[in-house]
Amino acid sequence: MTRTTMTRTAGNASLVLLAGTLLALFGAETQLASTVQAQRPAINLGQGIGIRIENSANHDSGSPVGQIKLVVNTLLDTNSAGPFVVTLEQARRVLATASCEAQPVVYSGEAQDGQGYLSECVTNNIPAAALRTNAPADVVIAVVDDATDARTEIYRGTFPVIAFSDWTGNDNAGRPVHIEQRALRQDSFYGVGFVRQYIADEIGFSYVDTQNTGDLPRESAMRCRIGTGEWRAYEASHGARWMQTARNRAYVGGRAHEDGPETIVTQVVSFTSRMPIAVAGRDRTPSAGSSMDGAWTCEFRWGGAGTRVVAREFRFVVRSGYIVPHAIESQIASGRGTVLVAIGMNSGAMPVIFDPALVRDTVAGRRLTGATAPLVSTMPGRATNPSFTVPRGGRRRR
Image (tube, rainbow, N blue to C red; front, top):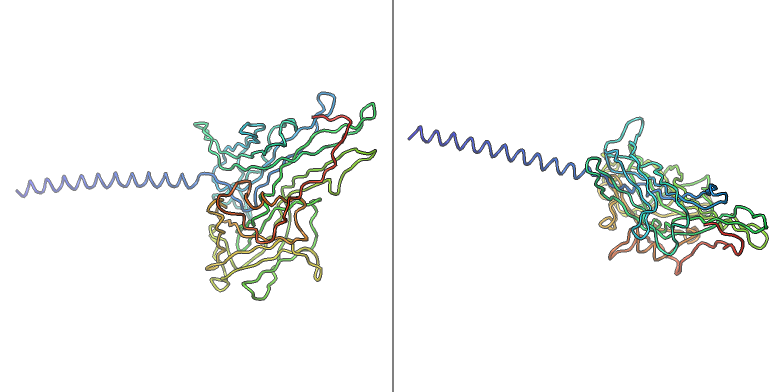
């Protein structure tokens, strides 16, 4: 009896050991699958997304013809180089394509784990007229599996198309020759602020703006306060990136119309400052702890002392020293180490083109459902559109 019991006990122990091994293997496989899932590439909106159409003229036919290409820059949450495919589409028809690899993000000579950068990913040229103005265009980013060629779409943004012209001179008969050109309207980026944790205690604040030039004032300042408390100044450096320029040149009434309102420049403007608070996801512990918790307002201002003008106002809540993501992130994922926050505009420093419907109902090219963009200032009652001079007569090259 004892021997039999011992044999059964040993057999049961073997079964338990086998089951434990299988469970461990299954658990490891599940954990691996979760890790793979977690590491799938994703867009990081820490600096917005750099989307622009570049215009040129093709002279191969002997006469200038307008042509365009799409250029994309964006941060990625990934350890993979890709490849990534960027497409310009309209009505689900692919017009232009690029294949690019993600570059490592390097701070102080050290590559950052889990971060990549899609830098100047440029599509092939296509005729400008191929991108119609009576329908929006889609900018799509997908990652491709080298083994299966399967594409996984990680971003699709929808943007209205702007048409403008470039006067290239007159023909032999003295008639002005214009070629078609294009740009993408990016109002959907106006209604939200992008905040990202950089190395150490540096935090970057970014917003998208559209003006008649891409020039930024040399002097700027940043100040913040908690609730209705006193303002505190923070040293900050500012800059701009990813400029899209739509410069209309039309020869009408015996003269060239260009510059001024004939030019609109869209770009990402950023302020970077060392702060005692932090954004979760980048292994940064806020030096203030919870001592500076509350509702924050930060103003970014242009100009010197006594003449400063507020460009943008960022509003957010700090809890346990960390900036709390806005509720809009339930629909638009911001990415690791990044948060989306409410933004306010000065009525005297508005973008020169502004469509309230686009700003209210879309963020980063994506339509919202049952929510609106977190713009806290009053919007204009009607859209402000480009006031380009339209060529009349002459010859128009498509």
